[in-house]
Length: 251
Image (cartoon, rainbow, N blue to C red; front, side, top):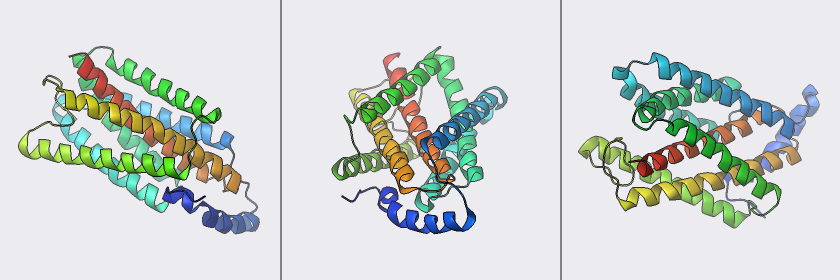
């Protein structure tokens, strides 16, 4: 069966091309053990940059740093995803941009809601471990129908989030997402946050399936960076949704 995920759909063609290269240069195929340390390295890089931004970026520049890194990170993520870039420098650049965004924004939330960052981080990794367990037990599988549903839902929440941000920047209205830490929260932001968390959690099934298929297809080791990038994107996305939901609950 063919997947609705374009990356997964093109894996057979990619594998054929890469197998010829593997034979020519004598490189080895990737394994799951290649993905784990690269994912860890990206998380460490994101954390170090985040801690540095937390301490070093002046409060007056926090908004500019957050918006600039968010937009640049979004563009870079789209380029890496569409072109299936495996360059660790570019992927590391994405981790740096996310670290800046995480650092300055998390500092603002922590100042209003002490302990919220630790809560969001613990929740993020707890969800990831839970989804990994469900995938490992074959409770959830990336079937074509499941993939279409998750990819469609993810595109939907991203588009709605960008529209909501544009409305906020232009008209100052907060509909689906409440950006200010002191504003009142209605029922709609709660629902949207829960939907985003659910979608973010389900994307890990696609990421784990991509890793498994890449290993089975015998792709080169450098594709482990691309798989690690996918996991980082999912973890950062989920962290934001949990951070926002916890801030709603604690108001």
